[in-house]
Image (cartoon, rainbow, N blue to C red; front, side):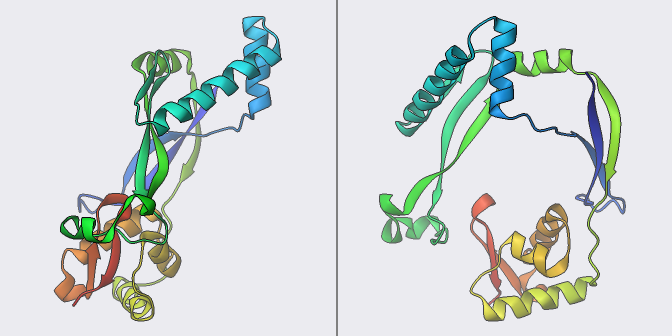
Length: 208
């Protein structure tokens, strides 16, 4: 069976004057029951046995990660918990963290997964690709100056702004909005927009 790939247009990250391209798989959904049924058929086992093993692995994996373990499953990958601040709490500066933060405001926000090399190799060996569709960037109907003004007006009414807010305001794609906000925040005296926090906890405020 073939899999299809999509040519995805992404923003010009290096100011080359041209947008860039990367390729991604056109994904088809497979539900849990179908996956279990296929495993049972190929392994000549009862579906109930497959379900029991998967349920046990899921429960034990969650428990081990909750206890701080990084769990490696041979041929599958390595799993560990990711931490972040509670949704209603903003990321604080490192120097002030201990004064404003305690364990009750920190929670597990996701699971980091790194695929085992054997899984990547096996997937590549079994994969036969066909050309699929093309995905273009979302174009904003506003000029850069208008987008900046929209952001500034938003921040006058709200204490902070995140990338999804800027996407909704401007109509840009998420990648283009992320890059544009990063550039604006690098020159707050000109744009009026500054950034705080790091990586997934980054947010934007009015420059003082």
